[in-house]
Length: 119
Image (cartoon, rainbow, N blue to C red):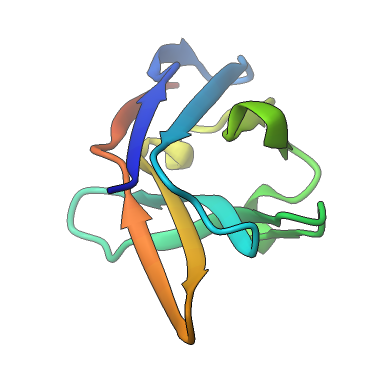
């Protein structure tokens, strides 16, 4: 059973920075992708950034140039460095791990960590 544990959320002023971390444990396929999604009150969950096991990245347009996703494969950990934060970045941020199990793509989610950006 894969488990994801997030850390690093909190309260920050606009223009500030935060770094989120997510560590995965359990049996994980070598073919996988890790990423971050967020959900603001009253809105649907949306993709923030993803990174494949080979290092390829994908970002939402709203965070390009401000957020950087990275991973340490040896530690099964993904990071999200968030700079120049805006009030509209306020949301619960969820870690996601998708992996290929036999022929199925299976996704796992963390419990979420709150990020609040004050104006």
